[in-house]
Image (cartoon, rainbow, N blue to C red; front, side, top):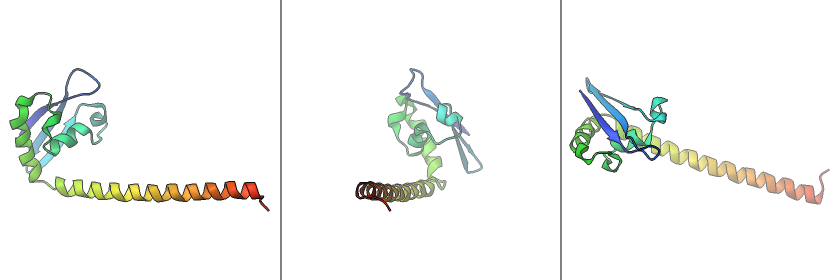
Length: 118
């Protein structure tokens, strides 16, 4: 079973096409935006997977979006989304710590350059 939704674009007047394929309780999603063509997770896929109708180019497709979301709810998508969020939080924390360490090292070097290095 297939459902094709039209997604709003911020970079062109034509909508992007997001194709949902439901086959043997497996959901596949493809988008024809640049990120989607590269196999990346784009904002269009993510919005529709979360049942966000604000990305719909044509509000008349709301019922089709609801059908897609019925498929989504029967997959492990929510678990994967939670995992992504956890990984993102951990990564942001690690980046913040690395920036603090870098800043401290720069300040130490600047101080030692001013005081003199042996």
